[in-house]
Image (cartoon, rainbow, N blue to C red; front, side, top):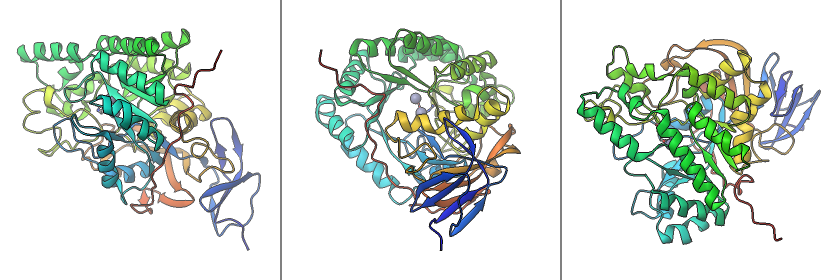
Length: 476
Ligand code: URP
Ligand code: ZN
Ligand code: ZN
């Protein structure tokens, strides 16, 4: 008679703190014991030679989001979360976007309808605020934070989303009041428009000029401005998808000043460069790599590693934002062929995030195994109010686990992917380390690339307030 539904034996358990040879006993979807030897188990998995790590938590993915007035995203909740479990993830945090003029609450209800019964992973929502009206700030946001949507994202660019400085300040102030964490997309709108108009006038319309239209100075200026606004309103913020040295140094400067500024970076900023946007010969294939901020250069990879190693960055997310390449509904839509301005921004990456960081980080000796777990799972759980339910392997945590082969060598190829896009920007990239099994709350949902889970396995996560967001002030 066994006490456990599942026992994982013979592997090495890695958390953000420890690396130990241990067995893991699971009952009713939770981890019950982590011990030198665990007997029994209605099902036993031999994990000899493997790493047993907390399932990846990807706190920055876009699913079923209208593409800023453009073509449809290649992933809805079903294919996007299927891709996520294939990549060793067990939780994703996509966005519920408020279109201008719409109620935020109604937008959240719409995204729930889209996600209902479709998710292979657990999921929560960040809120994207595009229209911070008095009723949004005064009523809707505080009520939604109370209901478990404890973080929001604001944009300093994009026609349909950009907030002006006054609006940013109002949102930051509101976040302070309701103790939500604000994620900020830092690129300066006017500078990008100026550069885009100038490049187009000169006939420079190929996808590569997307990178020229938004150089690091544009990201640095916006990062500094967001930090200044956060200082003025006394609210912590998370600067997302940081691409290189200029913005990284702004965040480091703010952190050294004692401000609560957090940083996120992504695989594209350690694995792609602006040269990828040139395509085969300054042609449209460069559109496959158009995302914002754009990938920079190899010196920027070094700067990102410097930020990762020295703790400037807290999370490593995919910013999965997939469009098809070959269809007229995606990157190559008729308008996009006329100028980079119209190429939808975003690339797929939820399925390759862990492999890229493991390979370039752990295997190449830049980070430890424990730092890898912190950057891909634990810190996301802590930052976004999911800890201590998610993000570690210890009694009481959800049994969300990735069993990882640290020696497996693979070449990333589209045929291995489970996403809705028709390409991966990492095609041909050689990696070492691969997820061989994903376990969601005790259920094996992926084994050797085979999807064993079902849409609807994933549950909505009502998140706690982030301990990293504003705290109530202590009375003097
Ligand atoms: O190009 C990108 N990153 N698109 C996704 C939207 C965003 O800004 O995160
Ligand atoms: Zn963004
Ligand atoms: Zn994004």
